[in-house]
Image (tube, rainbow, N blue to C red; front, side, top):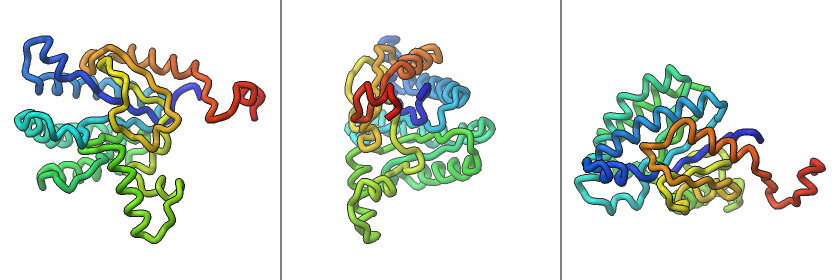
Length: 233
């Protein structure tokens, strides 16, 4: 596989980027949105069919209330602003996560943005908000059991938050940390992991290309030996 079918990104470092410039943390998030636009366009042009980004984890509620409120308001404005440009780029938006605690305004913004882009076929763009990998597995198991299905791998796959996107091939994390922080745990079972010291607002198209080049050189064995892979087994 020369490039990933499903690329996942943990966008870390917005707050540190802002702090290093003596700016409010929310300014880092605003700059981070510009990077998201760049990466969505670049991923689309490189033939990546599924892009998932970690926008707000289920653990992020523990951040200062002022920052959380600003982020939630930011999501509302961003969804309204970005839906039409995504549609023009033939990108379908999905917001994945537990919506039960969201305001009515945010839920409406999500539903409207998803509806606007529903006919786009060029790339699936999964924005994970109030999402956690363990939550996703638990809710999938609960829904599968409620539907009367046995808890098999296939049935868990069916009820995950983004069943259309399948396994993660490459997971990128910016900001220097080397962990996956409860992001897409089930689907990342065989993901290649690429870490960079770059803070998310600094991440560029060239950085994405560096990660994709590294991925293209990886030997993905999925439990097989190198000899089996070379022999096409």
